[in-house]
Image (tube, one colour):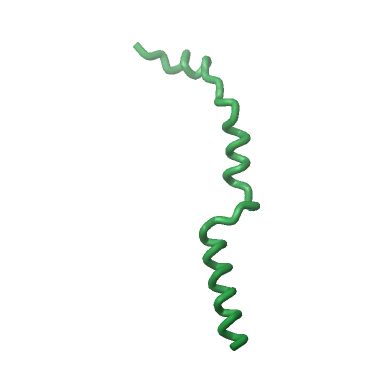
Length: 50
């Protein structure tokens, strides 16, 4: 039978999880939304200058 409490006591988190989590949720990296907004604003700027 599976002893849930015993398994929780033995649990050790993966080594790179905290490091990876910080990388994933940092705001330094552009996502697709940022890129689309940048492209749209560039196109609108070109239309306004014509």
